[in-house]
Image 1 (cartoon, rainbow, N blue to C red):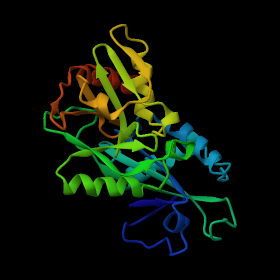
Image 2 (cartoon, rainbow, N blue to C red):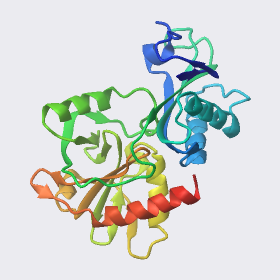
Image 3 (tube, helix red, strand yellow):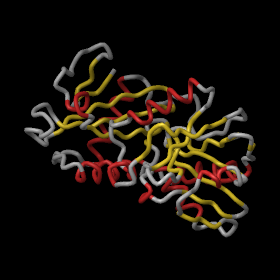
Length: 282
């Protein structure tokens, strides 16, 4: 079942048409998050990011778009799919309503909620090979729009095709200044000694929720020094560890880039702390 503007529909129901602005112009935002037994992980952070992004894109925020209302709609969707007592992946999409060409005739919005079952309730690490490559065909623009979770993901699609064709599990993206920005599906962290580096938002990386939570954890730890800084491609092979973060996987260690193989000790340590944070602050 899919939730469209507060009504549950079977998945095969056709409730969008060819004028949908998300389809025509990518005029849409989305949040992807974990639900655990009917509780949304880091829901407040996801909600605040969505509201901020809607304001930046000049979308009209409905009066009923409160945290409680949208959370209730997500819970109803989980129940409609019998996933309220299971781990689940939730996608909340908001798009500007039909009308206009590049210039919209309205800033009013609609929303869609879809859910799928997940295997594990909390984040976990799999001991498997995870080799990445560097995608250099197209670049991320280092501006505010690149930090938003919009439906404009053609760069990520092309990078994913490149990764599949070349046998990579993922690819790292560069911005127009040739700094490493992020992975195809999440933020990037680099570990060297006790320093943990991650690109700043000014480089154009996604304003990721798990990135934010992990940074909050790192600044409280004496064992590590968090540094927000641009990362050169040449630094990748000098690192002790590389890992990717997103709201579904949590932390994904990279095992190999070119000829360099990496450990995952810091990633394992931080994953436990991330799960503890999720339990305390769902």
